[in-house]
Length: 398
Image (cartoon, rainbow, N blue to C red; front, side, top):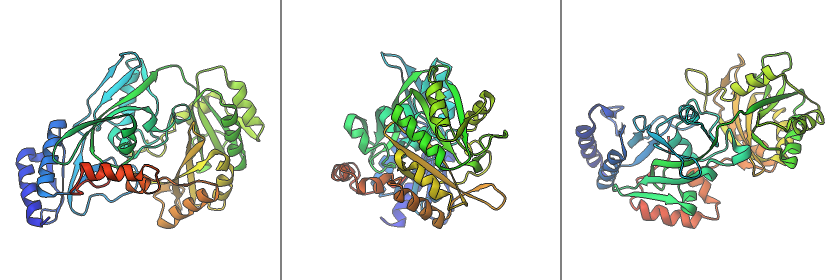
């Protein structure tokens, strides 16, 4: 489509949305709009389809990506934060995409429920952004990938039509970065809010935590979360520093954790230290200011020991990991700056983390179109993409 057609679309949207429509550069071709509800998203999608205007979803940018698309329109969802807890049998929450995960968790806990999983970037990231990417995070040891805990997704298609996806179709939308529809709502399964008991253990050498996690994965004690942190992340400020494994359980399994830890050269930390490590699980996303955009890769739990040993040969990289019930761990890596602060990894750092993951039997954490390139559902995804977006105006999450 021509720049003239884009300008016509921009004028139409500016009249409708007023201050909620913004041009980053009046002379350029990029703009953003902030709808207040699904009706407004549908109107934007209709205008975009009519004028061939590229659409991208604007997340909280807790992962790497350009600040704005080079051309077209990005949708921001900060006004779409409504939610409701329902208890028709299993507790669920119906929600809109703009609410941050940590805010949602606080609200559902006030009603006696808790999210099954949420990202380690929960203070910054929004529900819609993580749904568009999928992932492993806090709670994945018991509940797996985010996509395994979604009952339904409501999307708006180019042209303004609405669609509710359930069952197998969810796998073509969650993690697709908006390429198969604009996520405007979702229904997530909840768990009962209980008294989760934090634990933490320290290891001097990188081999220990990988072996301990593999032992726990084999024994399968009922943990809710199991994570790992590099010493540079400093989740513990006591004398017992080192590689940490940490998480929560609901009671009665202390012996299984202690056996796995002591059997591989680790030391259980005090209750106070465990609570501090648990409270710092969002680091560095809990900090104010700009957030470094991490590199990510997936490794199988049996390869975690090898990956940590190889990371010891790359002292400029620090990782945290979330372990999933399916036997994989998501590594989230940062560059350690000269002052010890965490920075966005460069291209060479990302290549190093990927190489380490591949040598440990894992690979790249892929989302969107890249994820479906090697997926057994590739043809199914492409058929859906062609059906809902024949003009190809839906782009990737930013």
